[in-house]
Length: 173
Image (cartoon, rainbow, N blue to C red; front, side, top):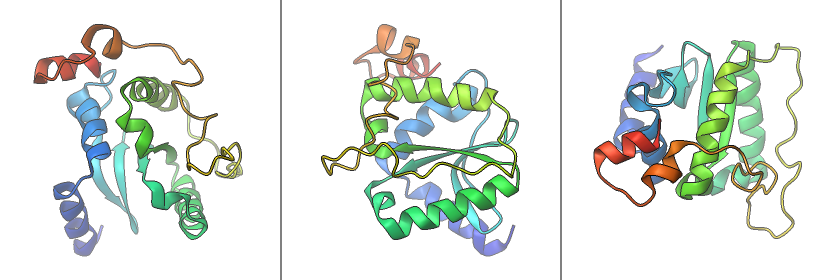
């Protein structure tokens, strides 16, 4: 990893967005099923939002700009490069991270993605536009964990509305 990539990763760690901070609070310190994640991890020419080296899973929180066609094409190239390196990418909309019930489902899906072996490099990823709502709000109703009724975790049931550090940690387990 180049020194320039390391500097960029450090800078990104210091300027994390609110959705990134909320997700990091659930992933850090092996809080999610004992999985160890790194934040703003440089790999090759890219910096991954979150990376679990044991499962070779990258988790990316995508803001609204990732809905633009040029950015979607760039994301596709990035995901393909990562796949060639044996790293699966799990993308989630930043707006879904901000919603507590959606976050609960996202955490379940991250655990499931971490348990699955990465797809072989010959697999062709699905287009991200598939299943997009026609309302123009940029949200994907099919991939929203809360809307699909994914299983629950202790996060919402036991810790809804709590803001202490201990409560946040329990919510993310």
